[in-house]
Picture (cartoon, rainbow, N blue to C red):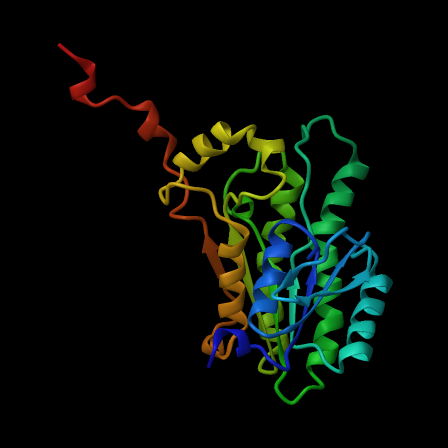
Length: 262
């Protein structure tokens, strides 16, 4: 099957699909032939598009359970079905856990955990009615699996998302598969806010065994595979997408005998 036809007749909903990783995922599914719906609180100036095919947009604050239910209902009313949900919306600015307000932490957890749960619940209700079910992909983070200084609540929420994926995969099988993808560092249009200029981004990339940060399309290709029939036996698991991980700090700190002289 041609790659541009792999998801023909499939409807894919991507939360936070107007920029960054979400936009990359949306464009990859469009290229694969899917009908793609993206949501965010505000419409972007330019919607994700590939070769003249453009994503549909629906406004939604995914932190609100009723809004998410209305979003899924609207997708089905417009397109007749929902085959793939990618729970991508999330994130957190850098803050000091010791001094930030409890309200801030609650907001981070609402966005990164509760929103994913509410969207998954609404999507599952529709997918269970479809003969061939559906796939729910949770976008996690390596922050769930290692210390996340500066984004402690975010890391905790993403750890909960991984647990959520494994539990829902059991509850909702066999009709609905639930999987997680956990990217490491990803270069997006906002990377400069975290890593500085091009030199800073390159320096960060050099710390990764792969020699670079991930691109949104790296995450997108993983999502395409997990949503495809080729991954029909993959459920309840987490795909680490981190270019080999992070080099242990002691390797940089340690000095070999050759470098010690004498």
